[in-house]
Structures are given as C-alpha cells and as structure tokens.
Length: 113
Image (tube, rainbow, N blue to C red; front, side):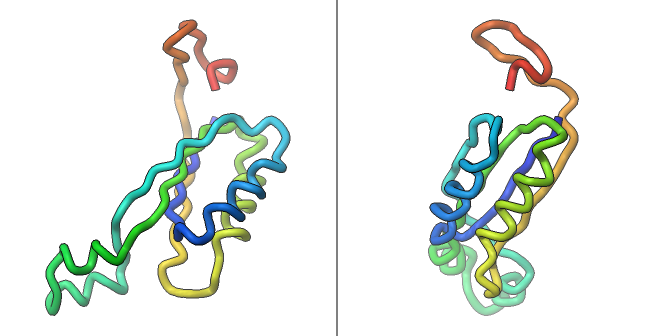
C-alpha cells in the first residue's frame, strides 16, 4: 500500500477531485485546508513576518492510501490536474504504508482501506 500526500492550490481542487473520481477502486480521500510556503517564500521571511506570508498562502492537503497498483494513476491524476505552471503549484509525496487498521471492525491491511 502507498500513502499519497499532496499539497495543491485551492483553485485546482475541483479538477483534481474529478480526475481522482475516475479511478476505479480508489478509496476515500482526506482533504484539509492548510497554510505553508516553499523555497520561494523562504527568502521573503527576512523582509516580512511569518504571519504576513501565511495569510496569503492557503493550500489544500490531500491524503490518500491506495493499493500499490493505483498509486501511479492517482499521482498522475493529481499532477496533471494541479499543474498551473506557476510557482507554488505544490508537491506530491509518496510513502510506503506498513499497515492499516479499520477502527470500527478491526480489519487490517488492504481490506481496511
């Protein structure tokens, strides 16, 4: 299993969700509103306060755990639909998941996602 974490611009969320919705067998998605900045804003910290920078840097964080065979199609869907060509389009992180436990039933592994 793989965990996909993606930080994207809010304006691209709808297109990303539509694309992900076309992937057969894709389990649920967790969506969070987050704030943050990348390398390009780091240099500005010397001139502005962190609060000033973060009030303009709203992002969306997607978290998805998928079977291995769906990981590449999910990453591709996010990448293609979150890309605007501008700085700050975001990042996608892909990690191994050792196990999943469904709290309600106690199921473990692939059947728990």
